[in-house]
Image (cartoon, rainbow, N blue to C red):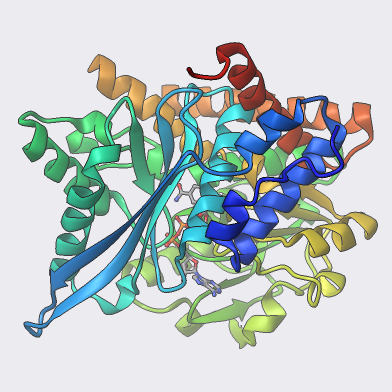
Length: 429
Ligand code: NAD
């Protein structure tokens, strides 16, 4: 192995300054040190295959024209169509999207899905935009990235700040362009447009599947177990709900507007009704408001970050008081924090395994759309549970056999799958 397995400076130049991309690259370097993969293959994996930046002008409600910057990054096209979410958030930049695309490649590798990794994003604040502005933004973005997407090329899905309605607009825009309904262009779309039953809940259910395996292994009983969930969107709200169903007490929850705590356990169905009525998590009556900084450090058995990347860092990692860290979000833990938590004996279920239920159900959706043959929710949930459980045990077995942390084991499996495919295919021309 070369001393510097990811010596390419192309990616460094393009994505310099992005701490999230640096995180993804540091992880790849760590994997390269424990694997026999040729350095030139690792180098190819260190930089995304394609990155497109688009300027998206749209008319705002006040009549003015505003330009937004959008990105689509395809980390690899080796293993099948690239696959990955589209996020709308103010902080989105090229490096963040590139890192997320790389993680998608490893995630698809761990789950043995015939996809490569991709990610997209638009730097905007969806909470401050009208429905009409969001629709125009989504349609124009789709138009701008049209040359590099397609059901056999690159398939999008919801992520931070986007949902099934966003996917419906993409599906409609693409379908109008190609002249026929093309549901297989996106996943995570509404059921009536060819969506998959259980897809919306799949990421959260997959997270809880991994948690159940971990608490069984650690001999913890659900009734004595407490959980803290950061983020109450698609992933976090389902995680909270599924934990509560299993008798695990969710004692604190937070989102971007505030955090709440109730040591006796938050009534999650009541909180879901409260939020569905358009109210804020922090205004839920049967819990006390706590400072946001206290959410992640609340003593608990299971901590589930389900919001943003890099929320667990070298400053707060030493203060975490959880037994299990189940990463619902992508990249919530910086490499420095990872070392601290490993040294403190925290059982980490890494993001690329823990939240892989979303892309797994997306795969089910894509397959159903291509075949025009639809499964019932029981079939989706059972298959999801089977694949998540088996991936968990594959990662755990490697971690125990090689005496390496779960994250390194998960990355090794994901990177190795993609690397082997690259080696088998050879180099064109
Ligand atoms: P979402 O937009 O539905 O929800 C995000 C939640 O995070 C919201 O409750 C929001 O208020 C909260 N949040 C945002 N900024 C915050 C902050 N600074 N502090 C605390 N909370 C904050 O998004 P989502 O789809 O649930 O995605 C959440 C995470 O899970 C992201 O990292 C995403 O990449 C990852 N993920 C999502 C899926 C999926 O299927 N949706 C799949 C895999 C991974």
